[in-house]
Length: 87
Image (cartoon, rainbow, N blue to C red; front, side, top):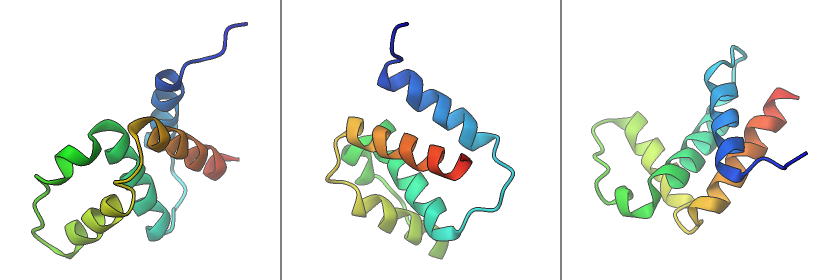
């Protein structure tokens, strides 16, 4: 059996996260958000982030904390985080 590639695993984790009904602590939600944004947009898009309210400020701060990660690293961490919440 062939092992799934990173993009497929990432998409599967995204679908799992989208269908979650359990309550997730805010700090974990921010971490998931940051990994997703870094994985899909990278730090180049971080420059265009507009902060309009406190919620957006927290999201931007979470993303800035992971801006050193390569998109592949962020995808792996996203997958691990989602899978740890589902088990």
